[in-house]
Amino acid sequence: MHFFDVTDIMLYIEKYTTVTGIQRVSFEVIKRMIERHGAQAVRLSYWDRKRHEYLSIESSFIAEMDEFDPDILSSVFFGRSARSHLDTPPMLHRYRNHPLKYHLHSLRLNYQALRGNEGHFNKHGSSISEWRKFRASAPQKTNSKLSNLDRQPVLEIAKSGDPLIILGASWNIEGLSECFQSLKDSHNMKISQMVYDLIPILMPEHIASDFSEEFYLWLKASTSYCTNYFVDSKNTARDLALFMDEIDVVRPIMTVPLAQNFHMADPKRTASYISPSARLTSYRARVDYSKGIQRDILNLSKMPFVLVVGTMESRKNIWRLAQAWQRLSRETDGLDLPKLVFAGKPGWHNEDFNQLIKATGNLGGWIQFANNPTDTELAYLYETCVFTAMVSLYEGWGLPIGESLFFGKTAVVANNSSMPEVGGDMVEYCDAHSIDSIYAACRKLITEPKHRATLEARIAGTKLRTWDDVTSDFVEFLIT
Image (cartoon, rainbow, N blue to C red; front, side):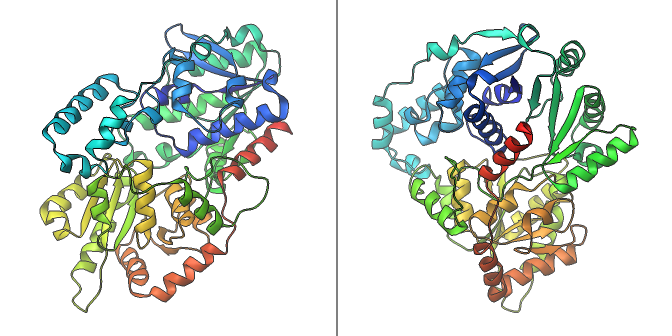
């Protein structure tokens, strides 16, 4: 019997309705294991915070799902369903798991519709007629079959030597590490943990609060119950090996690189290779950019822009990038400078960046922000940007680099940690600690379109790694 811990998925869908690459990896690995071994050989397990007990449920419902669906999983874990995305207007997608916010924003939209304020709806990529159509649809009802799945304590059904695979984040969850230790001690379960990076240990100055110490203690304690580890890059494998050397522990480390792919792009796996251009064409056929994109996002594409994706925190090195852009904006030799667009949510330790933005009025308008874009809005930004930039001081993988490549766009990338594993020879590298180097790399991609086209041609001719490849590698490791 294979047990897959889904505690992090349960906690994630309690707050969010979007899907990230990590949830997709977990889902696809579990689904493929079911396909190979049958639902009777795969169980889902999670930490029930109310009962303070580690429970297991059958996995057959996963086999019936085409892709990760927060609505179905909400029924399984919480006995109720979030409002289905099919029964929700795009303007309210982000509130599907928050009934009170959903209700309040619905009232606001009703008021604007009664006023006939078409502009309010157009700003969000919708219309009054579309809103009224959505209002007429019935909300999804809870699936009682899913909410009533049999739940058994893992301690009662696990056998000696059964594998327990943890693909998500398991730290900072009260009682969970102790639970894993108990399973190791009492049932000799073979526990595997996925580690995406050791940034809290390596760069504590860029981490909020006292999380660095918590992470260190969790990782050290995990070596007591983990049989082996998965990591997402060769660089993270080296970091983890060095950590284990320091604490005098030896555990097998298996590397499964993540994808050079947009996380919405692989709805179904395929047995044959699909070129990057064909995969992108297939994705475009499924996405309608004419709906659900806020006017502020659409306005960003009226002028050429360079895109920066990710949480705006100090580790992302955005202050140095902004300094390089300020230098570019002051050039008077006819440089046709694109704007710099940051797409993500506010982070921490950004005082220097925030002060620069405030003091210069967004560098005189050369810097713009797309706060918390939806998946569709983010894809639109990738589609319409000139190139992207990721000049972080350190990364465990660098998902935005791979997403940029999926859309055929090259990038300015910091030449450190795992990022060269993602960018290969398809991007322009820079020294993250040098404003001069960041400036030079950005200027080269701006002023040399032939060079940019050469990098884009390399992207088109490269077999980019997909989430399909990622899950296949996981499954191969798990069944050997």
